[in-house]
View 1 (cartoon, rainbow, N blue to C red):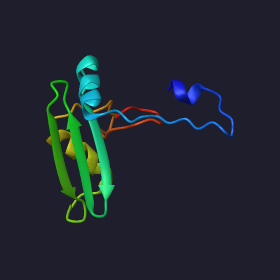
View 2 (tube, rainbow, N blue to C red):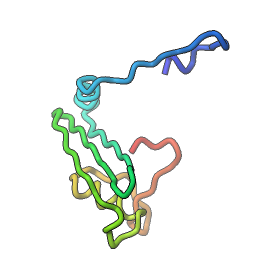
View 3 (cartoon, rainbow, N blue to C red):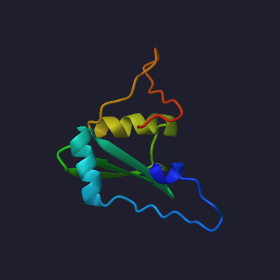
Length: 102
């Protein structure tokens, strides 16, 4: 974040080192938070879950073979991984606002 706030010129290049797996586990532990990462590649949805304990859970879902819409896929995946859902609206569908950390 500090690197993003620092003014740059055309000659300056800022390199930000991505966090290591141990850094990510430490963040989950310190914040007592479950971190979830989603990635779509072809017909697969890959889900990585890092718990505050450091345990990592991985799940692959073939989205082409699903009988449900993609809009419902993420809540179902979160439920199968036992991840707490974000705030819901009256229709009991998960809602996200721009900038939400999910």
